[in-house]
Length: 247
Image (cartoon, rainbow, N blue to C red; front, side, top):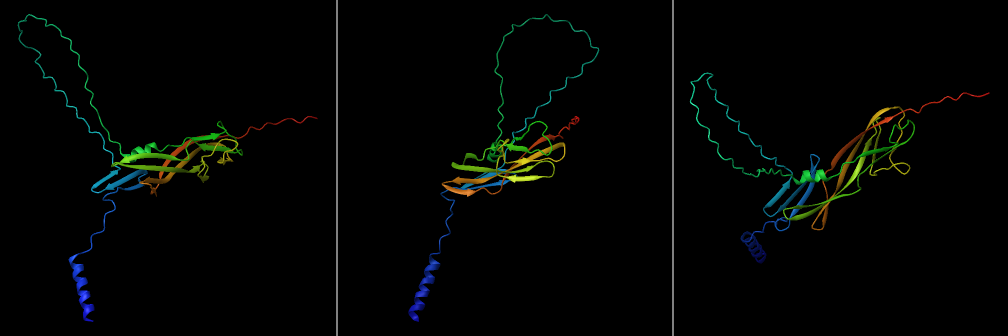
């Protein structure tokens, strides 16, 4: 028992003398990147050692204040005459001045820049002029199936890839969700039939989801970026012709 007690005491003494080192910070030497969405914008955060960067706040240009010109002082209506002095014309020297153009710098954050780059769909349909009731109308949008962007942050390269999904609202209470862009007649997959004539507001909600890669590691982007598009369509009733029966 005594040798075991001595060994245990030695181990405790060594543990107190040499405490375990703190867990190493994974972002001390290699940059840590996080991409997510907030308030319908893409946010990229980066941290490397003591350097951190979050591209989410834009700085507006400073407002310039214009000093009001002094008001002219009022002069009396009647004053004693003053002897006229001879007028001596001075030579006119033409000087050319270059106008000073004040540069206004507006910082656009990375979130705004990425969100502006994400394309917005244009709603198209066929027939393009007064489609008929009870006849299929073909809808589609002009969006790519993949959106890619490469950005730099604190010296690191981040590749972002987003893919769209669509939710159609045809204006008559009918909705349709898909990942297809649709197309015109006859191969388009997004079709809708209106049963009543009228003018309908068709809206398209595009939701962008995807992933980002940094240092050969691919991670999912948290959240989505959404874009809205609308178009009006007027549906009419087919005219009815009566043909008199002969005989």
